[in-house]
Every structure is written in structure tokens, then in C-alpha cells.
Length: 484
Ligand code: GLN
Image (cartoon, rainbow, N blue to C red; front, top):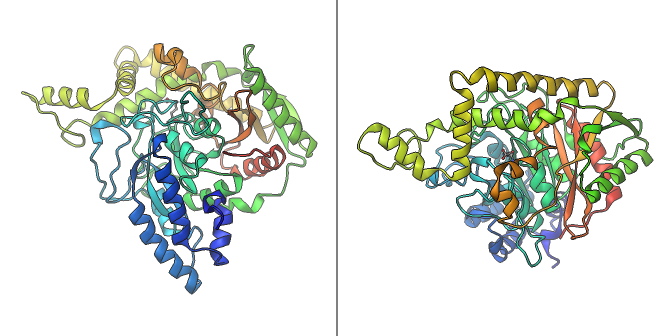
């Protein structure tokens, strides 16, 4: 039999319904890949027995004709989603043996649709990072690496690597400032951060609550559309979840881009922009044009403030969210003489360097005397960034930009390690989307001279993921990117 892990999620579902193979066979094929690729460090916990158990039920459901939307599809789950009875760590030492007594809404929806979970995927500690190097379990190796091990991107590096190396049919990710899109770009896969509120945040370990969103990472646009349809929906357990109807995102695929206006923001092409990325961007715009879209120049003048604003707001919210890991309510306790020592010892031992840095920045910008100068100002500029998008969407239906200004870089890269700001700069094209709460998708747009994937980003109006999917499908068909 051909290798079943080469099938897209959609093809696998077709094969299962036509009884060409069983869910158990499909699951075993993915388990074999998961085991063969352990060196990539994509999974931090493997749960093959549970996946096989679900596969057996799935096969029965196919026999009885009671199969559901994702019946028997083996997925990988970012270890930021609480999974009932299965260890969930956020890749932090502080909760490295936390077994949630409940299931996140998104993973519950996937289970209810018949999917199984092969295991939990690596990420930057508490999703803080852009290279998956801050994980307590160590860095993920990008499957595109040759001699030098390269980063898979972050924070959803485990998810991106696992999908690219076919260690699962698709994966979940979360995106606070680019964590679905950037690793998707680095690993040559597709991922979408939906509109804020589209997917419930209930049961997802919080990083920055006004920015965090869950989303799918898959082999192609259709797989992501299929998954997002299942993952989305109002949830009364999340007060910021949007009470809006969820369309069948797959329905729009194939409708094309005729008549759509695609905005190209001038501010996203700084002088020193990498030539290859710039070329891939022009090429993507050309494809959309040839397929009947109109290219319009737009301006997002507050782009230059997006990084500083993000790196004030995200740490501020993180410092508050992470206060619960004190060794009393949550977290591996390290005793101390007094209560204060207990807190300090617990948090000193439990958190990694980057998380500590963010807590320090966050508490600083929220503290009396600095609150007005930093946090309040950042909130004001956040509104201006959002308004830039609103103005632009009067002139265009979608915005096309590169996903990242760089391709995957070596693990331990000196420039990135020496100064955290160099790492933060990589988020320049992604963070404003989260600040504005908009949906955005990244898809592979070609290979660099080093034969590494380059990603393109499509940004849409709030709750208009459908237009994004339409255009992404057109790009995908015409680019013809081949995965590993
Ligand atoms: N790289 C960004 C950061 O370090 C984004 C992370 C994310 O989206 N979770 O904060």
C-alpha cells in the first residue's frame, strides 16, 4: 500500500469513506512516522494507544454509516490545549506534570467530530517565542534542515514540524503574535489565525488574553478550511467568544478571486527586505492579478509601532495571566521559609529566561507611574493600528504580505540569542493582525535559494475568513508548492 501519510486530510477522509483503508491503518501509518521522526522533537507526549482506540470506533462508524466530519483522522495537539486526563505542560517546567481534569472547547469539538489525538506537540514556553527554542523540552528541529539543524519557528514549532514531516494529518496551533503563521511559513505548511472570538479560548493556557486565538495548521488550504469549520463557534465558557454563525469554510473554495481587490501595504516593504521574499510577494500578487483580482496600493501608517505596542501589551497580559503559577494554586511548589520565599523559589525554578523577561516587562509597564507612559499609550496606538486596517478595507478586500522577513534560521543563532529584540523583529508582519483582531492565513509561496520554504500572508476583514480561503486556494493552485 502507498504511504497513507502522504494523503491530505481531505483525501484521507475520502479514502476512509470509500473503505480503501481503515482508520486503524491510517493511524498506524502516522504512528510509524511519529516514531521514526522522534529526533525532530516535535512531540512532547505521544498517546498512540488512545489514538488507536478512537480509530477502532471510527472504523465501526464507517461500517454503520454514522461517520462524522473528521472520523478517524489522527491529529497532533499543541501542548497549550488542556486535554482531559492527558498531561498538558505549556512546555514549562512549572506545570510539567499538570493533568487537566477538563478538555478545551476546541479539542472537544475535534473529538466530537471523530478525530483522534496522536499526542501533544512542542512549543515555546507558554507560547512566548518565535523559534521554539524557549521550550522546557528543547528546540524543535525543522524537517527542512540539511546539515545544520534549523528552527521550526514558534511558538507552534512542534505543530508545524509534525505536519510538514507527516507525523499527523494536521495539528492545532495558537497565535498571539504570529505563532501559527510564522512556523507554518518556516516549515512549508498552511495555517490560519482566525478572527479573535471565532474559536473559544476556554481550556487553552492563557498567554495574552486579548490576542490569543486558536487555529488549524494543515497540509493545504482545504484541510485548514475543513478543520476551522469544526473548531469554530460560540462558547458560553469564553466571554470573548463571538456569537456568530459559522459558515462551512470549504464551500467557497474554487470560487476564485475575480473582482477582488488585493491591498499591498507600502510599509511592509522596508528598504532592506530580503530580495527572495520580495520576489515571492510580487509573484503572489501577479498570480492573483492574472486570476482576475485587482491589485491596489494601500498604507498602514502605524505599522512601525506594531512591535513596540505588541511587546508592551502581550507581556502586560502575560504577567497577569501567569500570576496563578505560584506553587499554591498552580505550579510545582518549591518550599520556602515564608510564603514570599515559597512564591519566589517556585517561580525562580519553574519559569525559563524568556518567560521571566516577559513577566518583568509586563509588571513594569503596569506599575504605578509607568502605566500611563507605556500601557495606556500602547492601548491608544493599538486602536490606531486597528483603524489603519479599517481604512484600508474600504479600498480592498484582502491584504497580501509576506509572513516573515526571514526564512528558518539555525538553532542557537547568535544574533537572535544575543539580543531578544532581534528575535522580536521577526514578528513585524504578523503582530498587527493580532492587535487588530483580524483573521490571517499563511501559505507556502515557494523556496528560497537555500531551498527553504517562504510564506505569504493573506489578511482579511473581521469574520471574513471565507475571502481569505478563496484567494489562498487560488494561490495554492498556481504556486504548486511541493512539501517534503
Ligand atoms: N513570537 C511572538 C512572541 O514571542 C508571538 C508568539 C505567539 O504568537 N504565541 O510573543
